[in-house]
Image: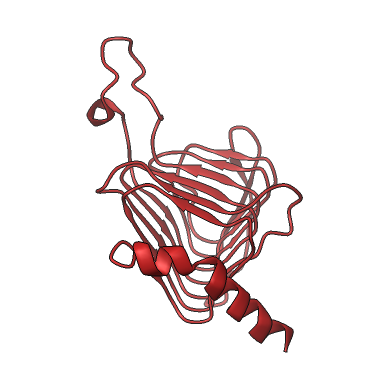
Length: 186
């Protein structure tokens, strides 16, 4: 019963996105969110089936920001985002069955790193991919161009600036691989 109430509440909370932005914001079936959920920007956001963005983090919601009309954020089926913030100027892909804590995921530098230009076209952006079944701990930062492999785990408060292969545990600033883990198909 509580699950059905949460789905109805989520539908109401996302009604403005569903009505006013239906061509660029797409929700899958059984989407769940709380009142702290927000989408901003003119890019495309695609959210799969059974995605849960109900944030239990105090004073922290789940925020999805597209920073250009060409930007994309894609979230796979059965993923859980608990207070994550995603900024996309190019593309951020979250796979299926991914768990994200209060992570910050940004595919760009937000501004040009020189003082010569302030145009968005001069900002360095590279897509981010977090593959299926990955976990990203709270207060972690995933930087532009990073791919996190299937079944990998990123420890709390890590800063990931390089790819993490599948079936690894990485932790620290900068994140370092600290352990191999057995994936289900090994």
